[in-house]
Length: 189
Image (tube, rainbow, N blue to C red; front, top):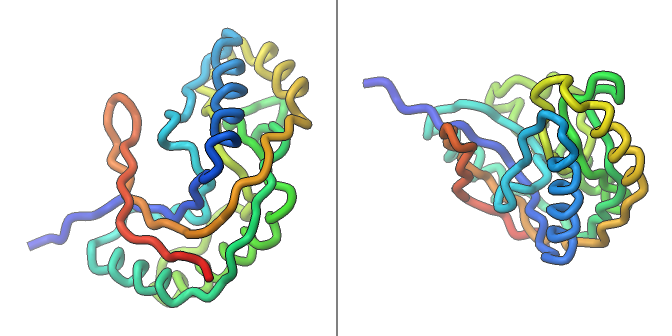
């Protein structure tokens, strides 16, 4: 019998509700600009430390063991600035950046990446850049307004949120958007 696959990723949640409210406010402003975008749902806003993809339950268990074995201190993450991937001329993703704490986030990513390779999970295709996805751009319609707002908020300061744990989440895709469920987490030291 074939084992069911789970679509999973490792995330850092936005613990500071004031930071989260600020992100939601800017997301909503950009979403109402007339650009053809899909906003990330309030409850799904997070920083993806590592998207893993579809894997069997046995691998999910191994990933939980990896998280449990990680040694890293808690730290603060300063969420600041709005930008886009891949370029301002062809935006596909609107994100909030991380300033202070980005080296710690990158270190956690590298630790996780090293352990995932041992499980034969393919390495990230893209270079890791700590960010919080706020919207996905669906087409070029209204992109000029979106670009104007991104420029207006490029230095927006959302504040500092503590990073006290990392979470393995399951993503269930539905017509209304993904539903995220926590599988396991690692409290940082």
